[in-house]
Length: 393
Image (spheres, rainbow, N blue to C red):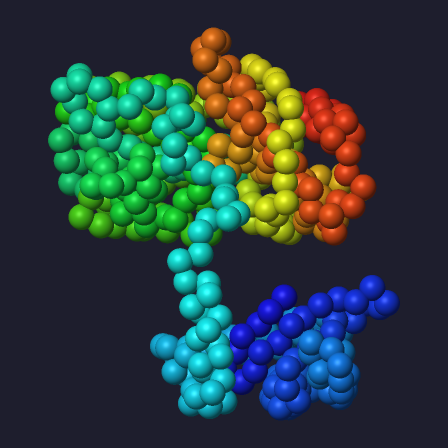
């Protein structure tokens, strides 16, 4: 890991001959400043001439972890290069600027999963029906409750509903839905899957994404020009609240959206199988060194409900942490957080209500999975799906 700071540049590695971290630097002064002001527990800087980094010191992992918040707290400047020039001098700032220039305009060489492509969405592109498209989100928590918003002033006869709106120029459906959810609920949600189906409104053709959020980030007293409050509701409670809407078209639509959500979630007990979120466990990024795995499978609605919930390990012996996000199942080793599989799903084209595997990526990072084999990975994936995710809780 490289770290560029206003007081020094450091390369941090873990050597194979011990548990300590080695912090390397081009100059003696950089390590002195690091040790004096942030890392007093580290050893003394040592000279190792003839190497790329002639100065180095060793420290325990925990010591560096405690130092990082103090380093971050001292980021009080608005322009990094200007701060470097003021702190360690203009010559250092010019060197850093060469690094900035080399990285400027860097292409997307490690793409992340997402739902920006229409090919991954179970809806047709805008058609000539005369109604404008609108996109929204249905937020659920780990217990399967849905978040409803009370419409300010019960405008147009709506009492309780879901956030949605029309796209701004250049926005994708997913971007529109996330923005509308943020504006109408104050929540920064995470997309799980596109909700199958088109839901007609009075003037718009509506599509929704199933989303989740940290319940602690939801303020039920949230209000705006469009919303007067929020409420978590069970299926029965949500039916009753939506039923208060006197706009017949809107009430029918929102009840249909609720039904589609519950159909996708399935009937599993949330106490036995809560919905997993990325923040529930330690994870590491999926590396660029990856390959495709040939795996085909169609999932019934009930099976998709199980996959959607993922898996939170109850102990370290389980070995897996699995969560669904942006239309993909992410598989991580529970011990290390290393990403192993990423399985993309989409609604099955030939079977209504069913889902199918679109593609599978597998980690081929030689340092993280040095002895990986395609045949063993395929067997491992099948076993993890059938014996873990689709098994009884």
